[in-house]
Length: 362
Ligand SMILES: Nc1ncnc2c1ncn2[C@@H]1O[C@H](COP(=O)(O)OP(=O)(O)OP(=O)(O)O)[C@@H](O)[C@H]1O
Image (tube, rainbow, N blue to C red; front, side, top):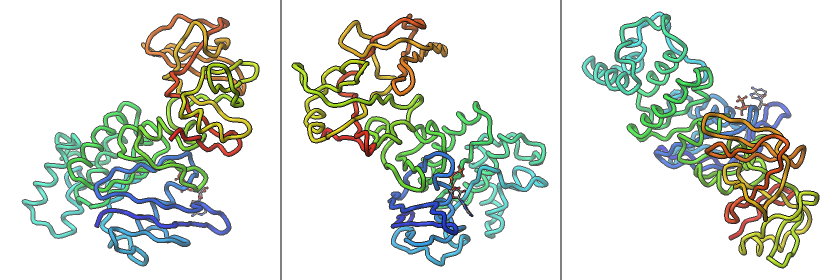
């Protein structure tokens, strides 16, 4: 019953196409993140699942039940927004108890549920505090608790952590994941923050301009982005992409990067797939996978070195040819030096420069 199917879902506002078409199957008990930049249609999709917006066309099914015409209050969904929606004149306990009380639950049952949720969200010492005396961080925790206590089979969260501070956000990422594991709800989580999506979600639906770009586990979208948008959007920093042309060499197929020279040879399967591609390609590799080598790599001037604790981000090249390399230690390079970097062959990804679509090795 708690699986969600979005079928050919379209939403237009006047003549603006906010969601061009969306097909997505979310399994019962799955944590699905809707991830993308501002304005890509995440909230619009979420609001249609909740029943706050009606689709222009297409279907939303919960299990095999069509949600067309089913009002929000009858969908059995819990919803948490960016801006906490709680009663400030009530205590934390009264806020948490509100939903079960409205449903007519017995006092002992309400007390039990309030106790469990308060414990999970570390609200126990604050239960008798008035909500108007709490910080924004704690208010959002109460808002999540107020929804979670109803044990909705489907839990929808729209950027719930964007107003809380960074340290608290890190704590809440773990707590939300634990909450979902405990209640085994189907959770749909809207965010523009790829780190939130990567750390919490079972699968991520990456969106851009009202179009679903890719659906996959965090590792799938990180390791095998379907296109250039996903390659750049996932990862911090995003994937490096250098423009070039496939070229035969005596060591096998390489990518000729023009003034940067040629890349190391491509792995056989990728080379085989690439032989079908005409025109320019983008040679992609993750900053974390770049290695410093003596020779046989791509040599570029170092333009900037960021040292963030034990992590070093080395910026190389400029303009279209700028790339970044991330190391877990201080690699001892400095500005204006040249450095030669090479990704391990299996981690290289190639994209068709004209379409942006990944060239798949398999
Ligand atoms: N009621 C509306 N009327 C007109 N345009 C709308 C309406 N709601 C959303 N839009 C537009 O639809 C597009 C998608 O909006 P949506 O809120 O779904 O994006 P989002 O990906 O959630 O981004 P954000 O994180 O900024 O909310 C935006 O360009 C937005 O301006």
